[in-house]
Length: 206
Image (cartoon, rainbow, N blue to C red; front, side, top):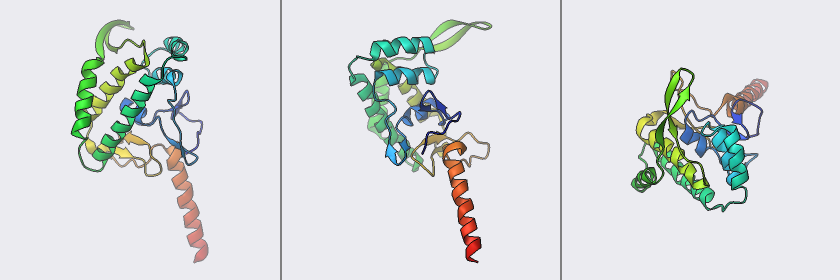
């Protein structure tokens, strides 16, 4: 995968999973044949929170300054959770169930890091929105674990897919449910080019 300029990228992060939990899972893609960690530190995490629409850009900037010298324990714990979640998603995509141990962990984290409703001013009056206190990197568990719980409980398992061309995952929202690629801008076009070249070679051999 190469970092093509497209709507699939926001501030250096991929958003093509059609679900926040999968977008978080996709923060460790393979690019140019090598795995790339897009959340190496607190600054990157603060940027991802803004790109995911969880905090405002201005608040993200403040968090980047605050977390630039912070301990990396919270970020490392989030990355470890991401990899355990990857195993759960792979199990579901293979027709199985998420590990019971992982489900217990999600339940524990939901209690430890609540993602609560708040009333905030909106365009037409008060609106009910989810809110969390982003003071430390660990606080990002709240929206991320909530998204994981939503995926595990509400998304149809047969619509969870791993791209045929790379390691990225997505929730297939297409009408026919036949999506195979993480993105036509990334793996889809590459597959089309490869198929076209193969047809040309086959025609030349006849």
